Length: 230
Image (cartoon, rainbow, N blue to C red; front, side):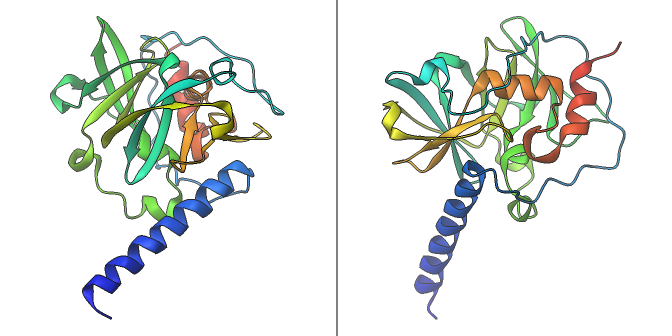
């Protein structure tokens, strides 16, 4: 097989794997969970107040998804995610020098970053949303992070690899999830762009509370990191 043929085959395989992964998320099919690190998590200082939102189940759509809305597309390790502009607080270029590390935390919790005169928890989004088989091939965050996306009035910072574009979507352009019993942060899939649509208030709530359905199996560590020092 020539190099060109091999490259085309790889791209096809990756696209099919992404389609299967998104379908699994939408159907709440169990997918491999992230292995939790062995170290004991250290509590995050109480610097961020996140309002708890009720658990969403059934076919209820977020308020921002009832009519046409705009969304920012960004990428994490090849996976495209969408976040509604209504829940987007801002974006910044990534700078490791601006992040205060918090030793002892789970690997996806990178530390605190200053934003609007506040200390905001910043996470490596890829480690929370990628399936286990792709995590094993994940490039270290030090080599791939380029931007930070702030959600929910700047309560959380989602580090990402690349900013893509802003798109205008209608409710019919999204394959909304029929249930939110697992992975409540996932509102649905944007059909044309084939990307996962994040529900930011729910994502923030999951990160802050460490609910049982915490992003891809990191519930225990999320709970310890988000409760703060009592």
